[in-house]
Image (cartoon, rainbow over all chains, first blue to last red):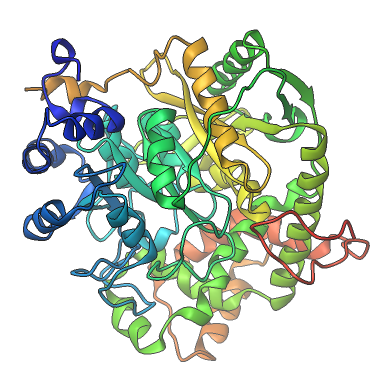
Length: 458
Length: 68
């Protein structure tokens, strides 16, 4: 642990926390206590944390097995059953009737020695990319609390960016890890579908959604991902890797600052020996609507009618209207969405035989205002959800792993993220590329500290 | 895109089949969503995907088994 640089254990990386505990330099109970204190001190301006449970966390800490995350506090999105808490999906209650218990993600974290310190805020039912709609209140962006943190894994990304925790678990069914990571300037990875146990996960029924780590940099994300996957993610050489850029399709209609920052990242990776090629993907013109329809409709059979009736009056008007709209979608639209999905999966598979990864921006614009969550693009102003899912949904339809990596800031100081996709099961390659970008940008984007974290640093 | 009156009739009648009602705010939100997503849905419905074979054994954890 570098004492000269450290004023608080949550200002160091996840791996340094683990190392400090392993070496005896820091005790797990001390780390837990200062983490809870920091959440109490700093989260008021953000609302990134939905719930803390000090007695249960302390028990986890005391009973933590030896493991790569021994004693390290982790926040977990409000979609996973904990032995002492049912997930609520960012709402009054989840419609899926999941009771308190050991979700698969909880078991993986516990078995790695981690301590679940908090449940993080999220967009209600996961039905949004902004994080400003939640039963817990809107989740603010640590870089500018008047702006959205992104969603639906809003609290996970905001808490990591604000240095409340060094690692958090998010989930991603249409971009819900990558959007908040881009907005909050942190690193997030959506795993290949189905690699993490889905029991006790409110959206475990979805064929689009996957959990993943959210951390400040790729090395920390690798450590947390290894815990989630329960296997090593070996670092491999990146020299000579080929990355495809679907410029005409997914680098279009972007905020100019996002375009510039992502293009700059590509240049840096090019200097690092990555070869770039223009590619074209079939079916992406329908990716947005296919993603929205599948996310909306796949959950309907899993919801319990009696719970829906109980929950409905407590939902935000936005989500209440959207959930009612789901009942009116013509069935042919779902069938055609699945046909589009097949087309995209085949095209991605064919393209990823010619290149080793794909890249385009994580979001088309930086974080919008909470009061008005619309983004301005060259073609006009749009609700952020509409604009974001166009770029996020492709990876979910395909099932491939995808990451958002910090790659710049706007002039106003808002973070920008580059999205990377790899072939199925090649999750580690995304972290290899992310680490390469960190090196070739002198780690300036992953080391940047939001003003809120500087103001309250003790 | 449906005209506003037709849209309201469609929504109210459709939800009534599920035993649900819709208030003015919900209807307003649905209209906004329809303005945005309706054209994309209609384009999807109008698209000719007859030469795209379905993926009969979808496993999103792996590449598709056949090229179709």
